[in-house]
Length: 149
Image 1 (cartoon, one colour):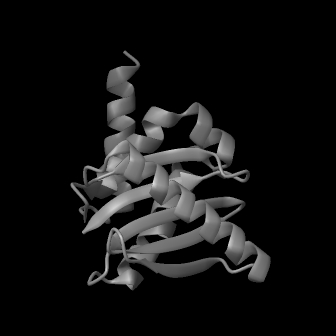
Image 2 (image 1 turned 60 degrees about the vertical axis):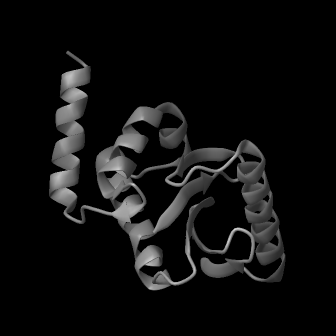
């Protein structure tokens, strides 16, 4: 089960965060601090595009993937497949790229509702739901047309 999906900008600013499990604000802040420290340490060591970190409290794996200065982080249970989680990040980025045409950090900043709609089409209640890019894009465009009327 996916506990959260977070995207950090180039300077560590939170650009997107969706928690599928209820955490207190203190735990959320602690998770963000751990993520930022992990990214800083990893950037100093090497310029890896992805890595996996296991936490003890809460008992989670953090799956990191970097695209053009943006870090996408999934928090999953330790017994879940890190490979499936790692593959869901590029799937999300490809959908953003298809919708915005060459997605960048500013697209995430200025189109927050659309980005969350795309994320919510992929994940529901912490589970990977839909893997059909065409269906997802059609659903999001349909919702956009309804909200712009």
